Image: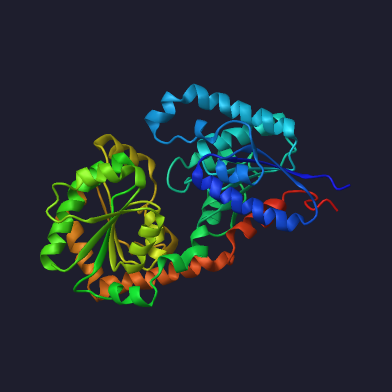
Length: 391
């Protein structure tokens, strides 16, 4: 009888749950007749795949300095709980997904309890941007990092981190969702009556800092392009708050909620005004020229200047190795500056074309791992296992 393959997986939030589900589905294909036993921490999707979650994912799905401090005793207990449960499960592989501050501590503790268990971590921590010493500290207890971005393997090697493999980004599998169909293409091409995305972020702090300059920038663009349509895709639980924050805007955006409405807006958009963050990569792959901005509290800006070691934090710029997407930080993110850059991104001309050419290069680089990030992730992780199919 073939011994089951045992995978202990720790997914700290909903996005990790989605990645983990793809990993498990592909792993079952590779294992063939060999049974798969799952344990660890996950949400509804992984539990539906047969994962026994040793405690609720909600216990560790926390972001932001204040919330983490408030829940610190529970988080520290859950780190120990996860590591001890993993050691008792005696897995063939530990796969941790994202949530690096939690997951890398689990991996470290498991390496002490069960040194022979191979460990892979999916989604490279942003050590290339800040807290770079984390790269070297990960190496003793993480055998392989599965990276979403093509520049990360070289960055981790330079920083003395664990071996890192670029497996590809899940967005590559969804390009058709972001790009216009025949009817939508006509709207995207209209420079006199464009659809313009307004994306102030998904966290309350960044939304509150960016909404005032975004509102004024929208009004300035509307003065030049009175037929422009402004669409603001909002996270569902923030719709009421965003609606209140736009109440005094001179030009009211069309607020939409839900993934389907967001993707429809992306397919129709000619340009976007966006918060710095992962959405800028979505926009690049959707081929939507973008103006990016960041504003935070004064202490956040001081801390960022000290910690972040890069000339740009925009993911498409990092992938290209040059600043193609204009970004405006803190006081530089004035309504006038944002509106001017946005008008240049809307109009047919060199500024818009430079972004479109850059986005084509981003796509080419992002596709270099092949069409299936999940298949690549499984292959890279199983390379750490002595006999994955039990033969």
